Image (cartoon, rainbow, N blue to C red; front, side, top):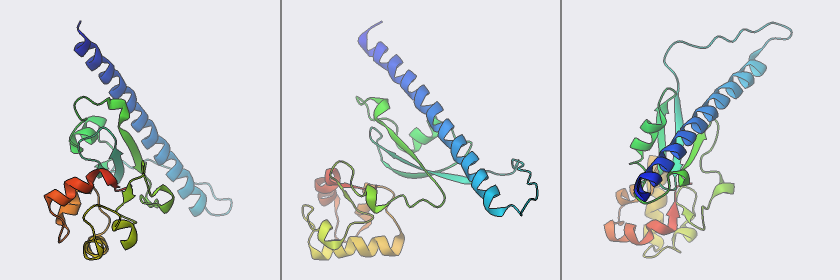
Length: 185
């Protein structure tokens, strides 16, 4: 067995571990939600029975970053597999370790762009940045900074850095020059 086959086997094992970690997180999130729901909606002293729904499951938002081709927020059904999650994000970048993929399951009432988590490795979060912060980026002056904020206000949070291409005044060259300086989390 050559080094490449060994590395692939190790990567598969890590993906397997990551898969079960995501499943465990989903189960914990569902259980916690059920407990909160029951505690908030139970009558005084009345017994409450929790019966899992056999109907369609509610969607789950997952933020993927790190070693994936297209970091961003993706919506899945609760029965989605880890393979589905990685495929939507363009897969793991060749040559990068799959264990470097960051998976964050977002809760229904959670703000995915909490100001406390504004930067990731010194990057500017385009979902929360002020015009002044945006102007520190290469090629972004007051007009383009305001265009980014206007786009964000009209269309909601950016789900990926690539969405900046939809902002008036941001072309492929500008996007490539600022891509490593910005994030959506």
